[in-house]
Amino acid sequence: MSTIADNIALVAERIRSACQAAQRAPDSVRLLAVSKTKPAAALREAYAAGLRDFGENYLQEALGKQQELTDLPLSWHFIGPIQSNKTRAIAEHFDWVHSVDRLKIAQRLSEQRPADLAPLNICIQVNVSGEASKSGCTPDELPALARAIDALPNLRLRGLMAIPEPTEDPAAQHAAFAAVQNLNNHLRGSLGLSLDTLSMGMSHDLEAAIAQGATWVRIGTALFGARDYSQS
Ligand SMILES: *Cc1c(COP(=O)(O)O)cnc(C)c1O
Image 1 (cartoon, rainbow, N blue to C red):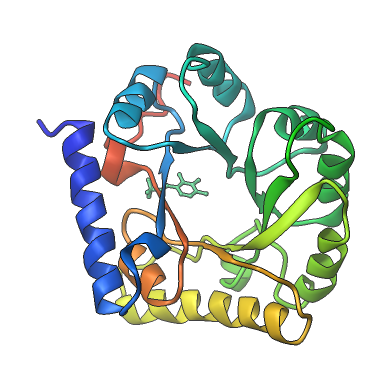
Image 2 (cartoon, rainbow, N blue to C red; image 1 turned 45 degrees about the horizontal axis):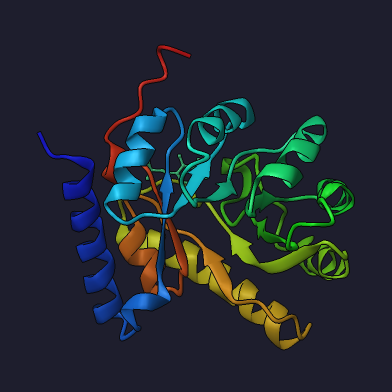
């Protein structure tokens, strides 16, 4: 059986060769380890093999693991759907939020971000797959939402996040990620926002995402193995 350290080495090699194919610097893409459903011991193992950034989808589960791992200097990223009643704990316990898709949530995160912490890093989740996805703002809503979030005091708008409809067709993968990159370029160009982040690419499509400018790839299965939801 392969260990988490073996899997990290394989993923790092995939990232390296995708960067090379895209003529990008290897350190221009960062690896976010998506640890939902995995025990604290698995994160500890990933930490020992060099990973520092962990993505979680479920607040209570994440807070439990944070309690178990206070001895490690980790960065925590919230990447799941956000309900209003969860914003305070997210603002208090995370460094990044990748899944903001409406202004009300962003306003609450800004108001509730503790004054002694750095601004919370934010990506706006955008839906480039139409009806197929229920999360994410529409491309039409994006410019006004980005402008409004950029003006909030305790947040730092970093860029966009997307989860395109899953497909094994590389051409379709590239097209979806290219659409996200175009939206990001529009926000930077026409709106003059200083964005440096594209959070896109998962275990099955990280190569296409890197070819289209991903700066965070969010990888779960390829690092930790298949998820088992039967316990929860
Ligand atoms: C679960 C999840 C991932 C990781 O997906 P894998 O296919 O296991 O790599 C990435 N991003 C988000 C938002 C997720 O919920």
